[in-house]
Structure formats: C-alpha cells, structure tokens
Amino acid sequence: MQIPERLVEAVSNANHLAVLTGAGVSAESGVPTFRDAQTGLWAQYRPEDLATPGAFRRQPRLVWEWYAWRRELVARVAPNPAHLALAELQGRVPRLTLITQNVDGLHQRAGSRDVIELHGNLTRTKCFAENRVVDEWPPTDEVPPRCPRCGAHLRPDVVWFEESLPAEALTRAMAASADCEVFLCVGTSTVVYPAAELPFRALAAGAVVVEINPTSTPLTARAHHVLTAAAGVALPALLRALKRD
Ligand code: BV8
Image (cartoon, rainbow, N blue to C red):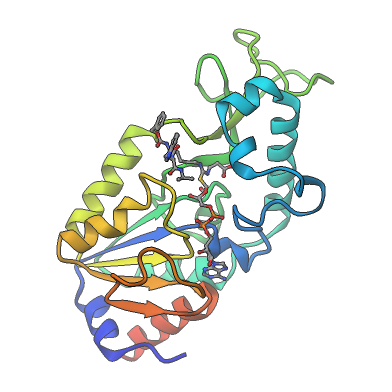
C-alpha cells in the first residue's frame, strides 16, 4: 500500500503524534466491532440496549453473560498487525499518545505503553454500587457474582452509554488532541461522543488529521488524508514508509 509522501513527512517531523482507535483495529484479530458484535446468540439484542446501566439493572444476568462471552472471546484472540504497528510506532516517534475506545486490552498486549482507555476495559470487574475495581471474589453459582465488600452486583469495568468517561482519561485525551502535530483516527465510526470529538478538536488546533478506515465516517470529508484501507494494512505500510524516510 502506497502512503502519500506528504503524510510520511508530517509523521516523520511530528514531535507529538496522537492516535485514536476504535473497534476497527481489533476487527482483524477476530473481535467483532461494536456494531456487528451482535452475532449468533446475541443477534436479537442491540448493543445500545445491553451497554447501559438501565439494562444491567433490569437484566443483570443477561448483561453479565454478554460481557463474559466477550471476555472469553478476547482472551482467545491475539493482537493483529495494526496493534503491533502502533506499538512499534511508539518507539519510533518522540511522543505518541494512544487513545482507545476499545475495551479489549489488545493494545497493551501488543506492547503499547500508557494507553488511555476512554471506555474502560472488560478484563477488569468493579462493584456496581461502590464503583471500585474488585480483583477477586469467592466462587459462586450466582450470576452476576456479588461484591465481597458490600454484596451489590459486580459488573464489567467499562463505560456504558449514559455514563461519564473517566475524567482523567478524557482530560489527557483532549489535551493530546489539542497539542499533537498529527492525529491518526483509526477504525472508528466516529459517532460516539465525547470520544468522537477528539479528531475535530485536533483539526481545530491545526493538526494534520488522518483517517484510516475502509468505509467513510463523519470525519472523512474533513480529514487531510484518508487511507481507505484496513488498519492491519495501512499502519504497517506507514511504519515501513517511515523506516525508508
Ligand atoms: C456520555 C464500552 C455524558 C462498552 C462504549 C442520549 C442519551 C444519553 C447519551 C447520549 C444521547 N445522545 C448522545 C449521547 C452520548 C452517547 C453517544 O455518543 N451516543 C451515540 C450512540 C450517539 N455517549 C455516551 O453516552 C457516553 N457518555 O456522554 O456521558 C452523559 C451522562 C448522562 C447522560 C447523557 C450523557 C458514553 C459512551 C461510551 C459507551 N461505551 N463502549 C462496551 O464496549 O460494551 S461505546 C462503543 O461504541 C465503542 O467503545 C465505540 O466507542 C463505539 C462505537 O462502536 P463500533 O461502531 O463498533 O466501533 P467503532 O465506532 O469503532 O466502528 C467500527 C469502525 O471500524 C467502522 O467505522 C468500520 O468501518 C471500521 N472498521 C472495520 N474493520 C476495520 C475498520 N477499520 C480499520 N480496519 C479494519 N479492519
């Protein structure tokens, strides 16, 4: 895949590169994107109907089992060339801020450091009442299990719709978007806020904004460069071009 020379130059000269990733970067690992996560057993549900506090209050077992299914799926897959290229890129530029909407932990497993998880991580569990992470709990047949401290239901440590994002993560992500010279927006439909605001914030701050996605999104018309390709193809190609540069 050919990377535009102007883009290679912009990334080569950047002191600070910010990257926002969405479910599209995990697609090539075999993790369904949020929109098509509803396969088979879950086809009858809309993610927006499962990933909310109200859904959990109404049907705690169903929501817990959906995340347990996704946790088991993620445990079985491996980072793909997109994750690996971003991890290697972090060692090739002065500063790379990796911001992800994904909850699968695959960036960290690929070797990326200091990942900003805007929407949490489904491999972590927390108490629904105390909102504090619980690392272990006594074996039980009850689904969902209960907090060993207070007895409330346990839940995945992810940000559901209508829940606020972790303040520190969002602040760091907003600051990186306003400070970077180049912003890569990879594998996201750019429709879920406030994460979707980040590439537009980078645009407003004068950064070179790049979209990597096989399909168009609300960002496509505004991006300086649009690589209409899979992340697992475009990111390794960008890395190779940088090595030649
Ligand atoms: C908030 C974690 C303040 C959980 C997720 C009305 C009422 C209440 C809220 C709202 C409202 N209207 C708007 C809102 C705000 C709402 C929102 O934005 N809604 C949208 C639907 C309009 N946002 C929120 O609620 C946020 N909180 O605003 O708090 C507040 C407080 C109280 C009341 C109101 C507001 C919280 C949002 C976080 C939700 N949690 N995930 C879980 O994973 O289970 S969001 C989830 O969906 C993902 O994390 C991701 O961010 C998002 C989109 O998922 P997908 O579409 O699957 O993934 P992605 O976007 O990444 O799309 C896949 C893309 O990849 C596609 O473009 C595809 O072309 C591309 N692709 C495919 N293959 C490849 C590829 N690209 C590259 N390579 C490939 N191989």
